[in-house]
Length: 276
Length: 253
Image (cartoon, rainbow over all chains, first blue to last red; front, side, top):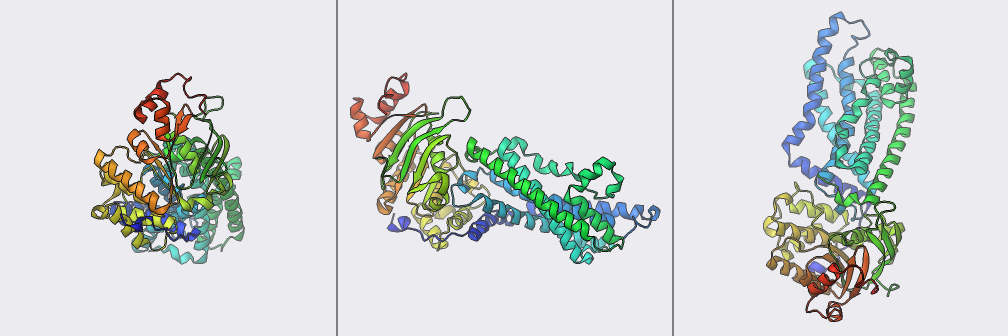
């Protein structure tokens, strides 16, 4: 061995560099696995095709409101944004658990918030890889261009992504707390709120007591806003602001839950032992 | 001794269950700069628990840890770039190649000149032949060498090693021990290692902390301990302590 092995390394770490390092770790996996890339696009595309066909088959017997162009397709694509955002973050986290890599990560200078930021960034990449091809295919198959929604689409997008992250933070916390036995939550938990998210029907359909629960969740405001826009009622600023405020609340709650789960993991030593 | 050390542990305690027996029971020790100190003890003695607390992966139930002059409870981020760790029980991502794993960790530690550093590590640790192979497809010996490369990527001042030669054949184990000796000498690094391999501990360590049931039951240089117990090697000392029913060594602390 020459002296070079022991040469003091020049260290110039930064939060951005560390976030980029964790993202690079996940991008290496995506780049090297065609099945993973296909899987990202598969479900959003299948969902969009199925709901597009349902929409076309029901169109002749539906009233004018329901016939508003692309309501169902838009709903399914937007719902998939939320689902993919949550799943994308959870899967990136689970990749670390499956590879028993948490111990190495958290003896490095990586801060927990930087790790979460990198998982959020990966979630965004995974979501776009999954949903954009489905949205483009909707133009070809059903002549419905969700991008024609314009700036309001960006408002819906941001709100749903943030809701997905808030839910994912809770999933992370529960897996850190309860171990891999809670892994199934990554796929299942988001469906618990789907009946009250007003994805395919308005909040008014729900029992009155449940309407209050629905309106405490950001997605209900996003989907109400989406329907209003597609029915020609313009952009519902009230729903938009409500979704923003609720997202801040739920993201704060999700962050607090994550901090709790991370603290428990450090107390129990599971950062070193977690894995399959 | 406690006031002067790269690692200073004071009354370090870990209880995993309230009211249960402590996994680490109020131990105090210091590791001087440039020394190699070994934690020696049977299964469940508290070696890995101690190392995990020193790394900040595990929260102590009591006591205080100072590493490179920083209180680990308040200021671990200041010191983590200057230390590193290797354990056969913590893996690197299996699907990433060796080169990709080293690139990720070089970035995490903020290493400048990453390509050159990876090339150096590959050459010195004999990784060149499998740098582009997925880490999950390596032999046990290759994995240990890659884990050491990751542990040396930032040329740490302090290296914590949990069973650094576990599952290696004697030849590779000897090679790794030689590499650690040279690294320590050239870098002036401080090493804390936990091991079941008595030859390894005798060869590498200046000082041995004998752990049993979470307590330091004896300590000293390998030669000192062998002489004290009237034995011919450290393995016999280990067996004496491991098979004692508590009387032996309890007073030694």
